[in-house]
Length: 126
Image: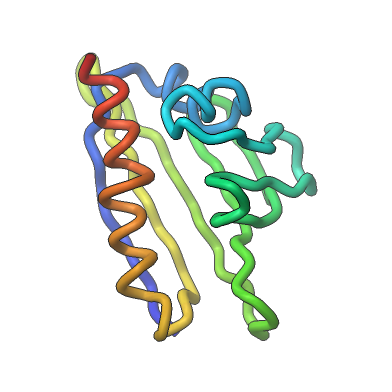
């Protein structure tokens, strides 16, 4: 199991980015795919046609999202934590993803950089 941590600068306010990460309709705008998401602890979510599935653990509106991502039957949960920090008129998004299966690590990191946060950065550059 491996861990991944990275910061991304997104050209929007933390509250707006938080909504983009937790509102199903807004997620669909920046991903181009239907999404199942509601910012309620204990609910399950699905993004990119079930490519990403998991359970919402906790929320701090405008500041923090904690989720469990599913990878088969692994013993320890894979936890994603996104912390949003105001950075002038932008947001510094701190990503921490723990317990990524070794065989999935490179694909997950590429997905975070290119698809997930890459799509958000593109969406808010326009």
